[in-house]
Image 1 (cartoon, one colour):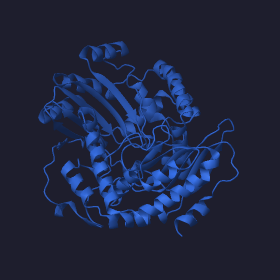
Image 2 (cartoon, helix red, strand yellow; image 1 turned 45 degrees about the vertical axis):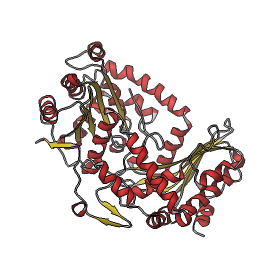
Image 3 (tube, helix red, strand yellow; image 1 turned 120 degrees about the vertical axis):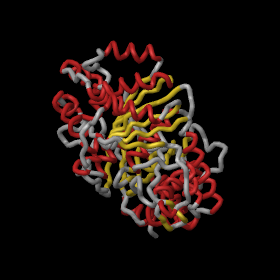
Image 4 (cartoon, rainbow, N blue to C red; image 1 turned 90 degrees about the horizontal axis):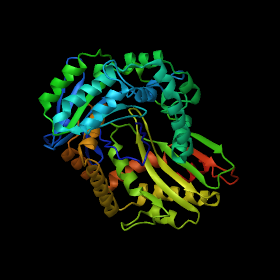
Length: 465
């Protein structure tokens, strides 16, 4: 019941707390008046309850916790993910069998996932079963048995999952990239944790993580579909009670971007998988939306699919003409205090240098030559993708919970549209010049030993020429 997010898998609404007007920022108090569809109530414990009623026969309710692998340390790295697995092994009120049978008889779906900054538990059910689903969620979070025999049994499951992750080159590249570029801070930790930790994490470690991080003001209960806000507020109070609160900030060690050149040699590989990136921006940074548009314009390419029907970007055209490049994917990853902007790729060794040249030309094109028509297409595509991602109660619930964790509020779609529309070709070029051309690079390569690798210094010189 675990899923992990990496750049390119999922579009996340990266909207800050200000309203963009060209290259200027105005406070939200000066913005046009919008009527958010999301209703939010803060309980005395600091826990927030947020709902959006769409009058559907089904509903999704989730608990979003401001806690993930970046809140861990070297010794307990992997604990948040381990806890996610343990949540479904039974509680003081329900055995594992009882839990599975109850969910199945309801026709519901119960799931969870862990990221570097969040842990999420959610249930999708018929609208009339929202109370039973809330009861189950509170039970697995508050009353999980964490039995020692279950802890021991789950180690092998997580170790197998780690083996699967190690076979996924994209996951390997991004894990290795994070370890290098955020070296010395918890953002460098993998979500699953190292093998030695998976083998040594104890029941006490799991219980301590819950006690330390599952605090009221670091939790959001979000629901959408056929839900009534006052009912969900009552259910939250009834089943979650008054969990203790904390500032939360004492647990955050800020991520520090470290330029790097790293290569993991695997002689058995014929292809090269890698990433080239610069430091990105946080969720609430004023340049966030502009970088999302940039990411959309640069796009992706897969030789097995071709360029598709839409007009490709200059970078897509250049990459498609390089023999030996199998794919590339632009990514924009945001965290609370930093981020990564770059390109993930798969190529034959001989095409690596031409590909880096194409990246340089593509970034410079965005910074100096991208035209107004292309920017408008990028803005429309971004908005379309974001709206399509909100099709159904589960993605809407995820969007509500995520935004309340990162922004403190749900960004109305009308406001998001207005902010995207306000981006101009000049303001986008200015952001790209600042963010893509004048930053130190971080590169990560997995593949056979290579002789002719362009250095970061060489690429940076080409970008700034």
